[in-house]
Amino acid sequence: MTRWVRKIFRKLMDYYEIANTKPILRRYVILGVFDGILIVLTIILATWIKKLEPEITWTSGVSGIIGISIASLWNTIQAEWHERYAELKRIERYILRSLRGTLYEKAYLASIILSTIAHTLSPLVGLVPLIIYKTLYDVGMDGLVPSIIVSLIILLLLGLMYRRELGTLHSIKSGIFMMIAGLLAVTITLIIFGTKP
Image (cartoon, rainbow, N blue to C red):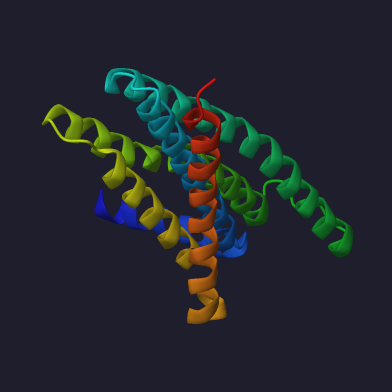
């Protein structure tokens, strides 16, 4: 059993290297988490401003995450399937032979599957500030500020993850850039829902 698992793991790692999956996976994880955090952040703030019950915040947040995850699933399948197979076709034209059934085709298929899983599941990170908000409310505390702070920290960490190869300064700039998106979402939500009709 252990040998079988090791064999599968080695094969997956080979696929991972052949299809250059690492940057693609990282990009999809960052995009998914970013979407999940921003949608939950704006839902928490808007429902708090309107003094809606945290149950409504929870329901809206979870349904928003489900919507983002399904959209991410479909988008990634569509985009990666076309991109990866177009890339495979380009390679075939260069080497003047079909790659059907080869290690390369399997590696590209594995890359599509991994990318799809990563992009589909990564918005679930948006549940973290939502859980904080709801949990604090359940114990009689206001969870707005802690959930906003946690959201901004997650966005900062995402930015730091994005440009690691380019050095510390680039990572910090990227992290700040992602946080600004969160602050912009907060500001726009405040402007729209914080003004009385």
